[in-house]
Image (cartoon, rainbow, N blue to C red; front, side, top):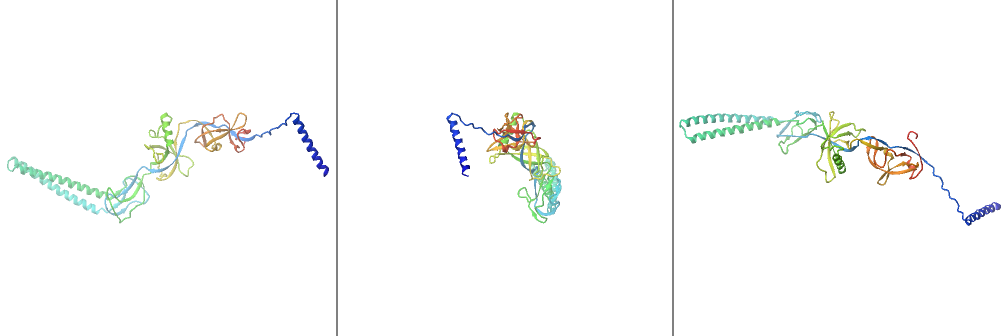
Length: 384
């Protein structure tokens, strides 16, 4: 045991003396840097092809025509002639207000007009007789004027009586409340037997009808979007939706693809100062009534003309605070960071506006094992 310890001490002294001797001779010990092992990654060039950009928004369907059905005359509701929620055609009978008071009023007005017609015939005959008597100087000029005045009054009375007849006929017609548009009707808001109030102001709302085909989808765009479209229109790259029916694609919340086609039909004339957004509206055909007012949907609006774009998988994009970047393989087969400016998604890939070209070799997987300057062995996705 003692002999082994002595041997260790002797070896340590020999090493120390050797080191001092080398130092005294002006020699320094050589330090070798350990070699860095290459990391295997999957890499491929970006895709370069012609694309058309589409900007996505969330919108809500709205009826083109929307009517609150109101009573135009007052009376007791006698009959409801529709099923709640059914589709009605323009002109269909919806409600019947008790017509008897209005029919009686019409009869009275017609009788009054007949009386006025008789009075007019008598006044006309008296006026003609007066003119003949005046020509023979049998009556005075003042009496002729009185007969002419009576004729004018009779004519005015017949006009007033005719107007009352027309008003009574309208009231009788208004006792039948008919659909003013075709569309889906709501339920009845008032039951049979209730007294409803008519009139241009304050008339009782009996139900509501909304049109379905075609239908609007309304959405809002940001101020940045508005400026973008304005610049595109000014440069001739894309017409303004105020001037052209730009195409729009739509998908419902349970759909994967934008399979419904429509077109822009309206852009508001100003931005909302409280939100910094501007209203837009697209029109879609709805023959089956699948789109209902109030439903949400996602839409895509044409955002550019066709152009050559650099596209990469979105998973290859990395984030460093606010900066987006990707990893590429440089000429010495080392990993290099490349800052990029992102565009929207197109055909399942991310558009790269700046920072990449079709000649770069993009690292798509294995980035968790690399840092700038790391040697890499790149293999294509087909080899991985």
